Length: 153
Length: 71
Image 1 (spheres, one colour):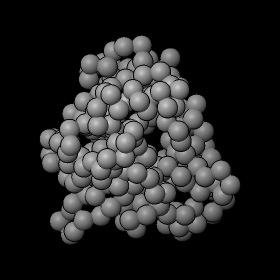
Image 2 (cartoon, one colour):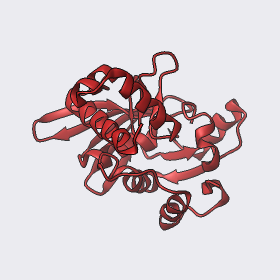
Image 3 (tube, one colour):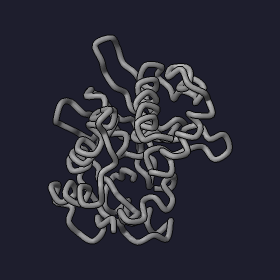
């Protein structure tokens, strides 16, 4: 697919994700762009090959539009906006924090210790971040191997 | 990328998963990295960073060890 079309698909996918509060299907993206579902399906495949999306293995629908996850994860992101609050799932703690950056909103991540499961909250307000209880973030996989198994990572 | 109560909890998790200890960031560092990495993701002008651009971003945040090398 032309690069420009892939970019339109990518941007509309993210816009719909925010508007709907959930990941749109490829049919919904196609309807919004007034194009064929097969065109969006092909575009999704190319965006995934370029590491811009992660797709579900069977259906080819979106699994990850980083930093957002289509499926529930242990990283619940609550964002505050003028018209209320919304919640999302981040793919990991890095992505969960990335939701605030991408949406330019404050809020908090409800999560837990990867080891013992203790409940944790990470709050973002402007440029300030605070974890309660105090905590640290661990990147297990070296950067050059992140895409070897992006779901585990 | 997970969040842990402490370095001790990271070590216990690494042992359970039989993985070497990776890189530990403070929550403040992780937030700065997330902000720099994702703030423009919805822009129509966003393009995937080149390896050099990603290395420069990591460097600007003090992430200069071999762990952060993409190639």
